[in-house]
Image (cartoon, rainbow, N blue to C red):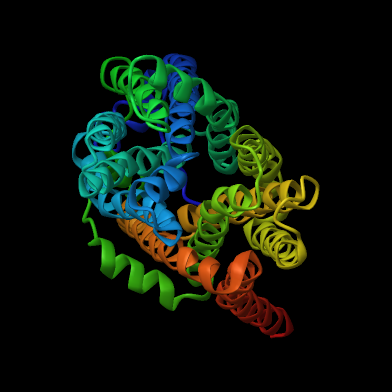
Length: 440
């Protein structure tokens, strides 16, 4: 596992080894204090980002379905947002290299604030195409929130990367659970000021993302990812690798392939099932307030257990936690195949397990991705993987609306099971290779 250093002097510092060590010793505790402060600020901002994303996106599919009059188009709302996240992933990674993670995060959050404004204006005036443009911009905040998990590993002590990542993801719990519950309040607020139904939640989202942008731009200070690459390589300069070459090289390795498929497949399954759940439930007469509760349970599953998943990764290894995540996702989708649309027992259980399985696979896959690749390609690979993850999820969200119309929620769940097959095959291949190596 490559070590990272928070030492400000860097690998190019001059002087003897003994004097350099003596010079660094008094700064060790301040460096740890700075790491703790930056991690704390990441946690606060992740909480706000969770509120921003969840408050608006909870009812986005219903908003689009109402505006267009076509239920199957509801899935395109999530597709637009996830596609926006995919488009933003690689530029944000490059910005992290050149200007710092905090600049990349601030840019993503600011894009979401602008997207929320576009959605409010466009939905109020009936400009459906502009609503989709706003949703795409809104997705940049989700991309920034996901990249915050990698920022957490960059301020973590060696051996604690997974736990630091999981703490940042866990912070999303409060925001993401509160977000759907605030959707109803936002809707009432919007109606009170003359906005159409379902538009008000995006007013709250825009305000929250504006606050997150200020914190990231004015308070949060994280190192440039490019400098971390140079530090890890032990030289004063770094030779960085392009995003897609790094992706292809990692995918050719069994461990890299498992890491990538864990992230991509888990996110694709989660988005495809989750985005159609509100449409499915309201179609069976479930009130919007109860839909918000179910989505909150789902998001609680996504983030509440993340510290446990991080601890498990550090204790038993990422591949085993990925296997656990895949098994939980399979159980969730099997419940979805047989659950009635108005069941307030089976549907919440299925959505809670869906989030839990996503958490295990994402944290396991992200840690495996971060700790097993060459430092020179790490940031580029992270951006490319997030882009691939969001492109696949955007396609999943778009197709899930069509599948829901043709085969119902059971059909959506069956398709999700099929998406898990490549992940299972990659895990089996890595396990067989490990057994061969032990036998040799």
